[in-house]
Image 1: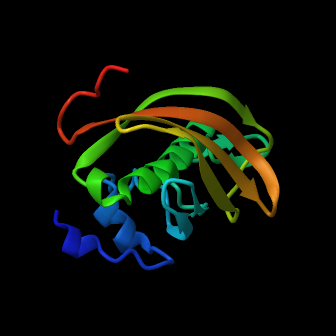
Image 2: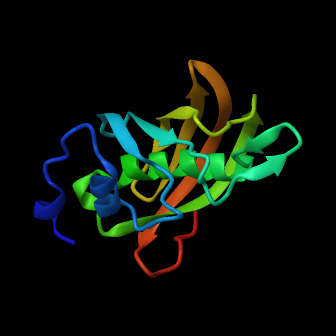
Length: 159
C-alpha cells in the first residue's frame, strides 16, 4: 500500500476508499461511507442496515442488529480516523478495551446509523475514542474505546 494510492482523502469516502484504509472485507466491513473527517479530532461514518445483513438477530419483535456488531461498526469508524494519517497507514489498530457502553434502542433493517468518533486522547501508539451511534438523531449506542497501534500482521504493543 502506498500513500499515492490513498491520497488525497476526498470526502465522502465510499466503500472502495474505506477498503483501501481498513483491512476488513465483506461481510466484516461494516462502514458504508465517511462523511466528515477532522484529522486527530473526529470522524463521522455511516452504516446502512439492510434486511439482508448476515448478522441480524431475529427476535419476537423482528430482526435487529446485534449490539456487538453495532459496537464493531463504531470501532471501525474510529479505526478509519486513526489510519487516515499517513504515518499510521502501514499500522493496524488493535481494539484493547471498551468502557461505559450503553445501548439505548434497537437498530433495525432500514435504519441508517450515523457514527461519530471523537478523540479523547491520542498518543503515538495508544489512544482513546468516544463513539456515538445515532439513528434519526436518537442515540442508539455510545461508549469509550481504547486502541493500540501495532504493525500489520504483528501483535499489539504493550500499553
